[in-house]
Amino acid sequence: MKLFNRKKDTDTGPQLVLLVEGMHCNSCGLLIDDELEDIPGVRSSSTDVKDGRTTVRLEEGADVATAALVAAVQQAGDYTARPAD
Image 1 (cartoon, rainbow, N blue to C red):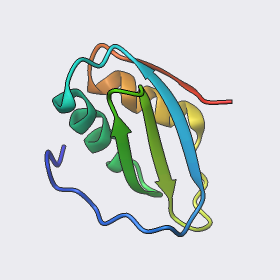
Image 2 (image 1 turned 120 degrees about the vertical axis):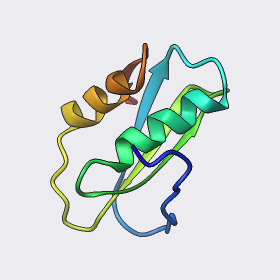
Image 3 (image 1 turned 90 degrees about the vertical axis):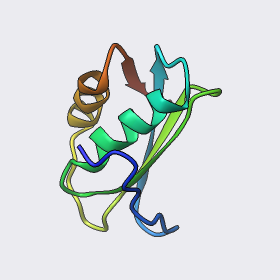
């Protein structure tokens, strides 16, 4: 885990939004972002605790399974996640 070692986000590459439940503070969001950014093919992750949403930006051409992203959120703590519609 790379706590507080944020990758620079850019506006390029596909993105996926996850709805996350169980977050209570900004530290929760940072933990989730760190877990997601450890996945190969994930460029960056930005979690909005207040809105309960995590935006995951992927590398161009990366094939990252949604199930892997959901599992990473659960690995971060007592959180549940699902893709936004």
